Length: 432
Image (tube, one colour):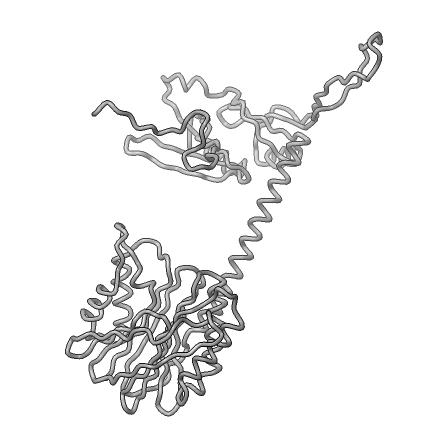
């Protein structure tokens, strides 16, 4: 110890550590009982509370907690030892007040379930005396009595004789009802959003390849694992006719619903124009870029890798639109990168590209992927990276394309086992 101290708290009059007001809520209130099981049944079965926790620690001590279905306060059911001071607190008034919008209805409901009430609900009103505006010499002894609040109340006991108040104040009732409606509205919105997202996920899943155009000299497979229910990654297999196969991987800038809509837009543009891809690959992508540019916001863009494979000649022609370099692992173990040949799609109305070409030999393997693979990171923040992807390709290269895709994805997940932050998309093809 060097005699110095570390300040854990902000100045008394300063801002909180995170610049925001700290969250504060009641966590638990102790209720002392003789038998936790008997008490638990009372709160769950007769009052309709929810079980928050039932844990037994290594010391043998048991923690049992319940909470009202519409509230956040937690009641801890504590079973003290008979010779302890806390044991003497059993059977007293807890000073706990439950607020409800309708005391009479709750009274009838709980009484049918066997809850013991001390008396039937009563109406009580508190007022203050408001003096009229009169001259100073006027007698003030007869002012006007104005109600502050009024409400219905009663008291009930649990099996151990602990008593609780059940009240329904006018202002409190309105607050309870407003809170209940707000919670119900929020849950309804969340439910609808979840349903809409599920539908969007099902629709987007159908946008990915459902059939594989037949080719005899190429074994190929692909996958897209979204970080959210929907995402902006895209892959496709296009039948270009005349024994030619189109392989596409794209990555829309952004995430979530917005990226998914743009992905669907790009997919529709590519599929609608792919008839001219065989003879005019540059024109094909120019039209796709023009449509994407016209039908998306100004800041929207996508990286794209488009490859056309000739099944007869085993020849690959490609356009890399600002995307990550494809990896071509030759049968002899050497590695080639198919780098960028043009800029991204969607940012510019006037757009052009150049093509690259390379032959494929029997035993060659190439991979198209998005940054969800290479930018996956471990607990130390280190990325999976291209080099690990290459090593994974080499390690599993004897597997079929579908097995190779699964093995690479598994390697990524082993390296980065925490929550996935970006879509993972991969196409692997093997020349046979």
